[in-house]
Length: 230
Image (cartoon, rainbow, N blue to C red; front, side, top):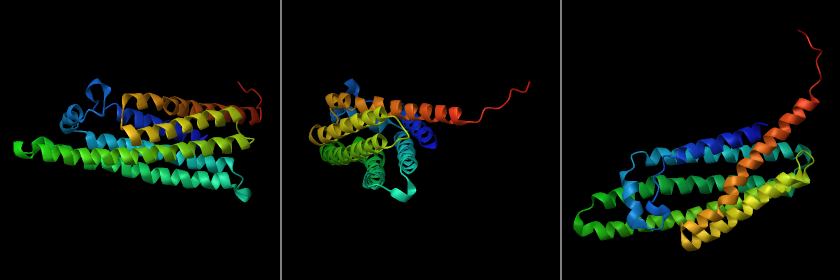
């Protein structure tokens, strides 16, 4: 129950922080001429990305709790150990991603916004390079998250503690992340690829809620019945 509760809590923290994220005009984050002014004007850019960082790490902590709960301590499987390693690697990639996006990109765009007219073009190219670095790190972070979800799904499917359909759902979410990561590496934050990421966005909370409900029902059913005492 702790793992699922942390998972949902982390998703809520990340979602709330995301509401304050500057949205690109027309939803096209690849239109840097239109996107950069919004980033420069944002006074909460760093705080928003710190919130997203906190939410992501709470989610990853929940996955480590789930791996530990699903694996028998005396019989750690290769899948479980790979899943834990992938989770830790994902956490590192996410930290780098949000540092690049929340700090480096903000400074680069702010420098472009206040640059003299003769230096505008050069400053824009500098900020564009930082954006490309963000695409690169986002691509690998999504790939690692996809691998983490797939390994978790396989662990769930071989465990007797949870229904196998939860494992299948999180595997589908992981495949969506992998496709998204490959796409971002090739095309950046195109609107089309944002649609591809929907399976992970939708299925992750569904699985977390499913685990929470199933564990709660099992505990309720296993609890010893007490005589009614008015």
